[in-house]
Amino acid sequence: MTAQADPIRTYGELKALGLGLGLPEVVETTAWGNPCLKAHGRMWVWWSPYADAAVFPASFDEREMLMAADPETFFLHPHYLKHPYVLVRAGRIDRGWATARLIAQWRAAAPKRWLKAWDAAKGGA
Image (cartoon, one colour):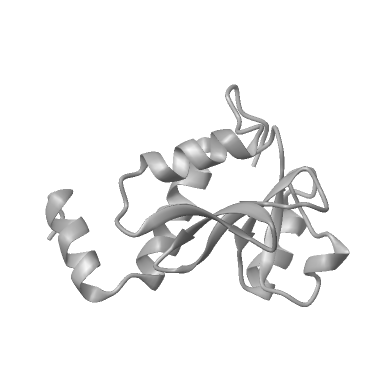
């Protein structure tokens, strides 16, 4: 991923993007005293208290691939070493990538009834 003309720079921008998608059961809350967005009651995306970066769930293999492909954008803080997450540097978060990523993560965790409703609302099913 290369730096974009209008990248996400703050948690506030990331939160606005996530909440603005109109996905059911997405809420802002806190976890371990830090703000985060949850989808279906699970951590969905948040801003790392250890680094100025967004944290997205990612498999260990995907994380390694992203970091190898673009180490200026994707990285890992030692706190997340044993967890399936990847950090994305502030100011390098592509809005298109983040939107697609959030929707894919939401769909992966959504109950079938929410998927059906979302697809119908978007004209997909």
